[in-house]
Image (cartoon, rainbow, N blue to C red; front, side, top):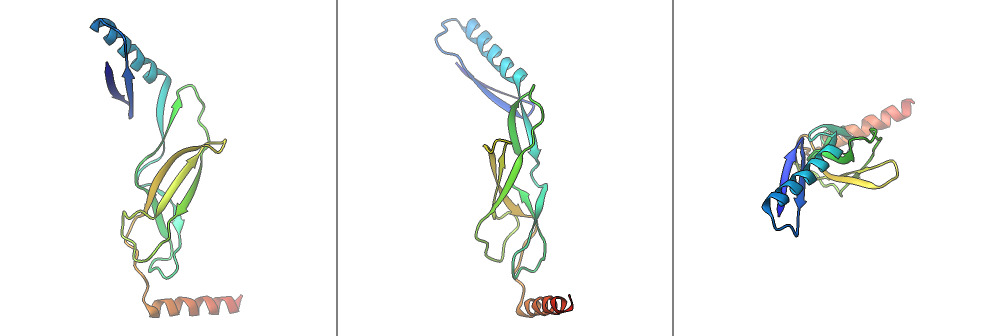
Length: 151
């Protein structure tokens, strides 16, 4: 008998083999699911759409580009465990302008305090990013040269 159940954003699967009586199978399946739900929980580290940080892309029409996760970043842990600190690393793909909103531009890798990979989530940008025209690029370069000479 194979059964699945979902509670508090966590789905479990229980499989019981070798029991001939349906009543015993049902009882053992319920006990397995209760055991799992009572001992473990899913914790959300980052929610879908939360701003993870900013990046800059040369020749983009926007100076600071906000990046977000395409789905929730979650961790399965024992309920008795203390809250841990998780480290995250952003890996960007080779980016070519223009970039459309919700286009995958890389991934967010979440690791525990021992460096073990916990989750990997695709990331995107919040708005469409276009390539700057020649005049705007020229003005940015000129501005950075003038500011650089002043300081």
